[in-house]
Amino acid sequence: MSQIDYEAFAQRFVAAIQAGDAEAVRAFYAPDAKIWHNIDHIEQTVDQNLKSLAWFVRTLPDRTYRVQRIAPLPDGFLQQHVLEATLPNGERWAMDACVVVRVENGKITRLDEYLDSAKTAQLVAATR
Image (tube, rainbow, N blue to C red; front, side, top):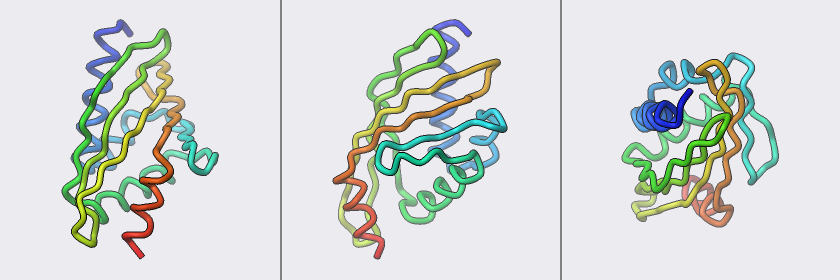
């Protein structure tokens, strides 16, 4: 893929996530893709990741992903974004995040997501 293709790919991927369309998101992943988060150091499967997405859709129905930067890499892209939403308790919330995405043959094979652990804890606390 060219750099322009990676940017367009990233934009379509975010749009599918924003829409909460699990099957559209699944279509971006290779079947054996791994998704890793810095907050727990666990590699998720695609199915596990889609369960997490479903939780976000239910918990934060007004969520938006404000993309700040997409930087093409030789084998994928880096994206910085801010996830903004209203917490279940009515409080406005925003979390900075960064993903490093590896793409092979037009499919995501690995996604490493770096999240603000304090903001993640705030989200978890607001859902209890």
